[in-house]
Amino acid sequence: MRTVLASIFFLISMTFAAAACPSWQLGGATYSFTGNDLAQTRSFGVQAGGEYDLSGCGLGGVGRGYVRSAPDYTFNLSGMETYRLALSVNSQCDSTLLVNTADTTWAFDDDSNGNLDPRLELSSPSQIGGRIDVWVGTYNNTACPATLVVQALPNQVAPPPQGAGGCPTWNVQGAQVNVTGDQLYTPQRYGVTAMGGTDLSGCAGYNGRGYAPTAPQYSFYLSNMEQYRLDIDVEANCDTVLLVNTPTTTWYFDDDSAGNLNPALSLQGNLDGRLDVWVGTYGGSSCQATLNMETFIAAAPQPQPQPQPQPQPAGGCPTGGLQGQAVNASGSFLYSPQTYQVMAGGSTDVSGCGIPNAFGYFNTAPAYSFFLSGMDEYRLEIQVDSQCDPTLLVRTADGQWYFNDDTNGLNPEINIRGAFALNGRVDVWVGSYGGSTCPASVEMETWYN
Image (tube, rainbow, N blue to C red; front, top):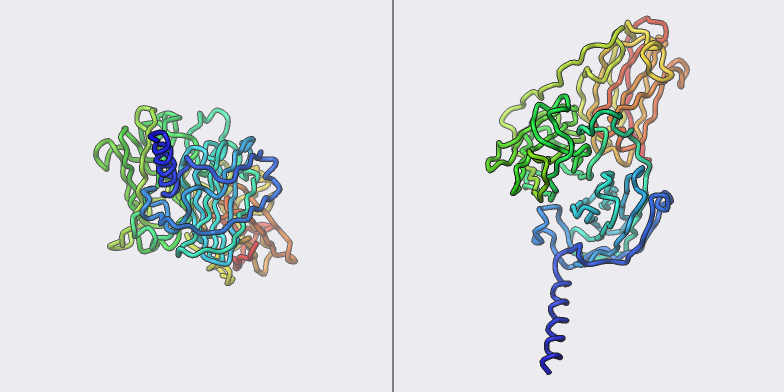
């Protein structure tokens, strides 16, 4: 009889353990895929919803909504080294997406797929090489049929240069989180593994000591930040350091400002766009940590410190080291065409500057530096109109160059797709074919992909 009672108690205990907040120890419907398998989109039916409110689950404030205890799906992934993983949901209700990655990091999204549906992109090898657990929930504790869409997308950025020693670089993306200044006015907490990697003292531009990985743990796509200051700090039981690259590609570092050997930073100005965060350690060890993000109404607008101008290349070639007139814009804002005035022309013949297939005369600094956000579902069309023979040069957020001359008669046009290329700083130069100058206008417009 005692054995029977013990068995009943064990089963009841297991039932209550399962009927709890989301747990990566539980498994969902399990599939195994390689990156090549997922190069073709895979769709999975699911009932969006659940009975457990994430706000009470102690997951570091990862998001808001209702999910089940066990994941809906468990994916065992391999061969993802040259891919990033895109997960999205299509539904007729306000659905949410919760993911526990291969390194047991939580990622969440609510509305990035449009139509109140979520979307996440993960690119860190440590997050997508192994077991991925996925929950499809709802924001308001409702339920509805939904489709989970999973695809491996080719990486759109080059690997870090050989010989760079694995220094942190914004050319690699972390776990993507879309969030607004209003949402961050309620403090948000994100679980993270503070880890070593590369000795920062051997890397240029960071002005700090400690160890950090090459890829950021998180890439935050920020919007509606104009009136806010952003405070970031870390809580951990080891000696952590904090490294941040802002949408203007400016580096910030801190070691102990939060006390108890933990770092903190306070940022203000030009924060719309992609902000990358590395949580490293002073001695190169690793430990579990919590990354805290919170906005505060700024007392008065403060200018954002600008990167120090790099030495100009020989001949004054166009360079991303200089910034043009700054414009903050979102994909939805540019859905209504926006026009910006510029003087076409320049003094440098770019045919000798090593920019692929480019020719004409340009200035060294861009005319405009657009800090873009919310571009995931759009392509960007850039057109120039003038009375001389203008040329168009664009450097995207991932460091790629685009050039055009005469798509519209003697006027150029460039179309660019991809969140990696468009979320962040996009520089625009308007030159001329023969070296003359004239007034011109640049039209920026987004279209749904």
